[in-house]
Length: 460
Image (cartoon, rainbow, N blue to C red; front, side):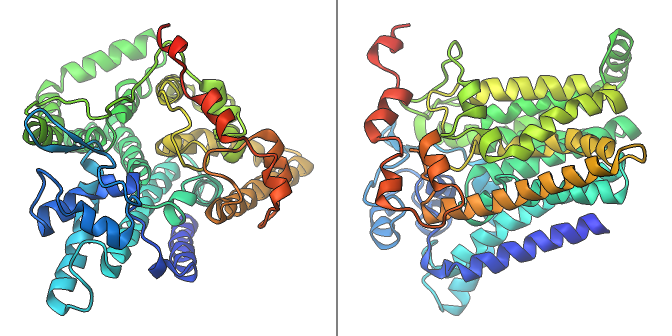
């Protein structure tokens, strides 16, 4: 029960902070978040999925991209505009959007335009709901392996000690929190399937993997978890092949489910571009020969381990996992290696305006297992009291640091792209910074030189 109380606490804190931020003055559907959300007003209100002609009007009123009326929208060869952002986030937002729209139409207390306050409230509610569902999946899974104290502490650290907190409150409506929920579900049902070997769990994995594809296609790397779960030596591999061979009918149905869910995105691409498979990120892409893994994990600009140090503790927890349950270590290790590589091969590896490494938020449910094994090792009966106290203080500090730095980010103290080592330590612990402080920040010229590929590098 303690772990569920932690989830309720997270939901309460999220709502409380949002209301005390005067969220009625804020529009969460801006820039990239606007692109993910845009499908719903286009389909259900303006009936214009072909050209998004309403964009200029709502942009002027709600500043969804501050005058850039084609932000994330590109002309296609069939004379329509394509929204470059995947449709899956809108699919998960849809129930909350429909409630808000029905309320606005029925009561007329606010404009039924897709962006007025009821829609904002629905967006916040949906974001919090799916994140809490992800946390619930994590807590139920962990209780299969650990006692309630370890489970509750792990959920507490994930919820309040990582950048999922920032993307719940200060930067909602992005795809990553929805991916967090989907990854947690894949992990939970994978464990359930191999425990009970019931086809219904495989079908649910298929549904979640299909949603992963249409929320953020590159995140399909999470399929490594159900494929390699508890495969750790030659005999376990042979046993796995035998099991899957006996489940060919269930596998076929699962693949069909994945395809049918993916068809939602494919149908939109066919409508907007004339192609079933369409690359929508014009001028952007991966550079697989030049990954920025070190920068992505350790840099002061966006480093995941710098701004989310609990994630680093989780990686150390793989050693404790090896000692306690080595069957799952290969799946976890391969997943993390592939996730880090793919995420940081993206040309703009810093992922624009963001806090910490936002593209790794989806991986947080998978970090829960090695983190819990680390806690189990530290808090075992044989551990020294001084070690337990010291570690508890360290984890408490990391949680407090994450909460504070998330607030700093929301206040603009932590800059959305121009962070460097000098400014990080100059602004450390401050809620206001002076112009002298800001002079130590990376300049825009330095940012462009360091992070944008030159013409020479493009020829490599």
